[in-house]
Length: 351
Length: 243
Image 1 (cartoon, rainbow over the protein chains, first blue to last red):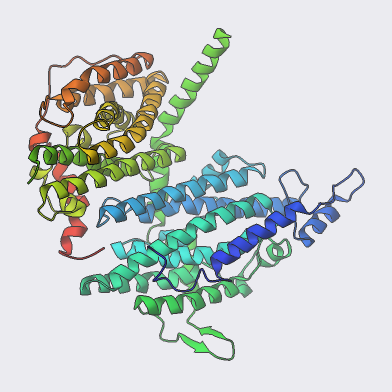
Image 2: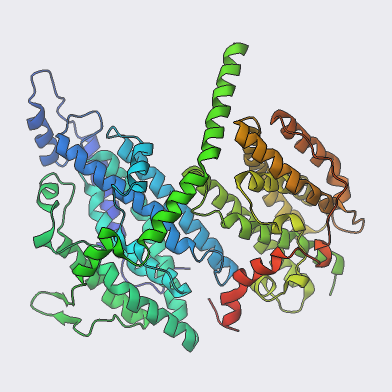
């Protein structure tokens, strides 16, 4: 039901095609014999060779400490984003306008919790526990994507998040399916497949609204107006200001620059917006024949920095909510641990 | 209307499932563990799925052109036929698990009996839903045991949750001899299931003569109107719109 009115993504060479190609590459790399590190192997050379050969670093392999730290930071922030990202959409579950939409949205928010858990598990392969990572989130020592610090004011925001925010996330994450760290690459393949489904659902919500009553059309346009620039900012600061990029590129954690991915996202959205009948709120948006890409207005990076530093519209609310859930659940987790301990000692006695 | 009794029955069961889903979904992003967030959403989705099947069928039986959304979003609280149990606020996690234990220990034998009833549509719905109910019961029973036999605090909270919820079980089993399944016939199995769980959880079965009811006649608690106000607000703000 989501197939026919949806432009181009899934054509050969589209994003889902790239995910599948990455999966095939991952399988073929696994099938190729990898040189085993012996007692005399130089570990740093061995690491460099595996990365150069587009094979995967696995948890048992030696890796530079900075590589490990970079991955922990990036995977954890990704996991935190999935968990915090449940809030803005979860905000509309109780008021979804039809039972079918309620079911789809509930399933989507549930998927995000699943992605969060899956990513925490990937981070744990690097020698850190989920509890430690959750503490770092709750204490504000690790970040999550700033996009989730914007409010969902109308039902159309659920559609705009699906189309634009999930769309931007996919553009960001598809190259990560080829990341040099095996557990992260495999997690991304699975996550991207589900995210692409979410993006279609969001697009379909907007499509229905944009072809509905005048009030629904206005709701859809208003949502796109508010989410467009924050979505562009999801790709991070412009290349010149990006602190971690160069090293991550060399390690094949990152494959494309922030600006390259942002351009790819804009080029993807323009045609989709036309089919939707909605206007991208950028008067400077036009095709550049020379570059074979769209020229567009950059997002307000000063605003991005303000939101990252904690002063977005919903930073406090999102963190308070997460802390409260964690705090109010403490007695339940303690009880589960106490019960498990009692059961274990009973089994011991019985044995 | 062809069969007003079956219509009323399907509507009541559909309303039970819908209101239960709405309450369970309130836990999304708030559960005590991330795994539990997923589990509660899963149970809410099952309830919502059953609600959609039952309400759609009720709408067909009624023959007045009302679909699942018309029944869910365009009735007032006095027209809802759900039991009071499902509309009670969630309370803490212990009370939510007490509610789920009672609901699933009722729904499992109900759907199982329904799977063998003469009405083919209801039988098919019962056949699908009973498998889900078995999982809901398993999940609730496990938590009631963990909390009942966990820490001092969790024991106190779990007993309080059971005490709060218990009187509302009575309404579930009021006799309806003409209905496709007479709920009164399910009480024995319910009592066996729940008392075994409570005993293992070191909890006591409350003794109370108070037996609140009225949900099946559309006389609800004060809570239902607020729940519906939130659930229906967007749908009602755009009459006739497609979503």
